[in-house]
Image (cartoon, rainbow, N blue to C red; front, side):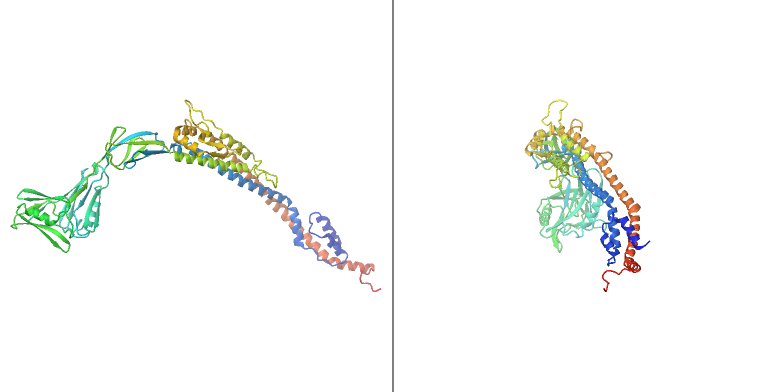
Length: 562
């Protein structure tokens, strides 16, 4: 094929699909003028762009589908939030079942009520609160001061007991050691060393309150002719306690009062003429008391040879009456006296009736109702946006003709026209309007707080019946069932619509991919070859024209000498 024929062939096959090719430039080349030739890459791209016109239409459809999917997903999310609100208001454990308890004497008695507790008023009289048994020792100079050889026995009210030796190098060389030994005994008590500016004491407290958790402490008796007490920090005094001396089988008890010193105790013992001599002494660790038989031979027995313990509190049960019924409790947290109510005894007010009122928790209910109004307005707002006409484009939103959105708008508004009618009797709350909730022309809701609070305060039962009905079949259930037609993951309208959009988008993607591999790829190869051949032909055309002119005896224009 000649160069001219090749060019003509290319022009006839591409003139309608390749606007980037300059036909006038090609014609100029046939006349022998210079030509830049064909830009094969640009020419092929222009032709392929024209061939891809169907793809651009399909891609535009995908863009629309993406916008529709995004908008519908937002509406779905908002509708699901509203459905959750309805479930919350249609639950035996939801905010409508929440209870508060008001005490007429919150300093002495507080209480909480479990969800669903029957509302009502109860009268409680607290005669005494439960107490926890505790003991403390006389002062020692420090937590690590060595204790004299002795022992003490701790006996619980329930029966178990244990004896702890001191000064033996095993369990009680110091107060710290003794505390560790007692805490490891599993007797239901805990021992701690309490230190202040005067010295250190061992405090032992029952793990729980009540009579059954009480315990007693006794010390082993010392028998001999000379005994010295443990050191007490200088300047410290004795607590209220007693010491029993037994000489010749006759016991004598000497009682000390808080604030006495060892010197005063020694004077008291010596004044009894028991045949012993008591002396108050001191050393680097503090003061002490020494008792010795006058003759150095006659033994005596003392009942608290190491240190005395003082009982600071006895274990006692709480005593109260609830609606006239006597109640005894080992702790100050009383359950079972009022079904669903936990009483917390804070102080005793003997003979003083305290009123407890169990009522619906208006705050939680108000919050839940306002939440569903907010979520409803979000959902209906997103729906309404799809039907607003843009003044510039004179078109609706991307879902303006979507059947799911069209039906949802109507369903949302109709769902809130619900009217509750009790099976028997009357009610003060039969519509959302009775709760102070009104609907505007655009379908949005607003809440009159004063009306709502009045209903929650004065007609809490009617409010609960409106939402829950007689068997969780009231307003909340009615709205939820309506919304479930759209939100159900299995076959709800949202799922069906979104799945359809996804399937269409997948089909378009496949169509585009198939068009690219089945047509565009081959066209690109063919066009590249054709335009390359045309380019070669155009480059050869001037030479061929010159040869033709020579054969015909023609002189090219512009070269004549005549």
